[in-house]
Amino acid sequence: MAVRGDTTFGLLLRPSARTTRWMPLAVIVVVAIAVVREGSRDGRDPAAVALPIATTLLGIWICLTFEDDAAELTSPAPVPLWLRRSVRASVTVSATALVWFGLTWVGTLEGPTVPTAAMFVSISLVALASAAIATRRMPSDRSGITATVGVVGVTVALPFALGLSLDRPIAIDPSRVVIGDPVSYWVTIGAIAILLLALAHRDPAVPGIIARLRRPASPRPTVRVPAQEGR
Image 1: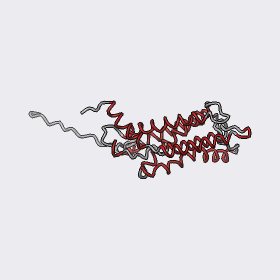
Image 2 (image 1 turned 90 degrees about the vertical axis):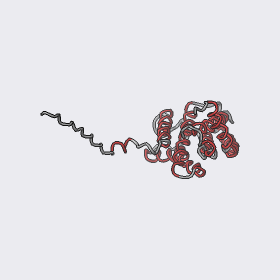
Image 3 (image 1 turned 45 degrees about the horizontal axis):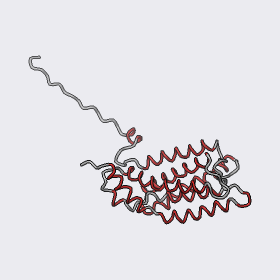
């Protein structure tokens, strides 16, 4: 029996939006506004440190996306896991994008720039990829906290590691990346996150490329032709 598109969308969207953890987002919004305001004092540029910190906090909330309390409600729907998670991701990422855009006008900030926007998109993708990987390793109700390691690693640990290894100034400013230009740096991180996100949603029942290459080739069946009489 075919399921109407609007019925399926409503089945997925309503439980997902209802069970999304909005309270942590409200707390993060208050903290993020305070961080950006504080970063604007004494003539400092909030885009250099304060906005990356606020973006990291929003990324941590995105890590809670796949802590899916609505899984039992949506599992009977005839749609794959990646589609159900896409609906949840659309809810959380859309809300986060609106909050982040508002933060870019707090204090002395005058809206988003290309480096800051690239940073936000990349951190959002890293958060989703980390959340998807974490849910494959542990119960979904505890995967969000573990997934925050990926977000903090990209925004804090990665610049420190690259700066120390390349002997370059260490900064979390999205426009002063340690290696390359800002757009290429964040696009590369986002592309890796997309790849990991896709791999995390691969059906475990389907063998991967490496497994297929290692699988021995099955011998071709031998076809015997019956001998003709009289020869």
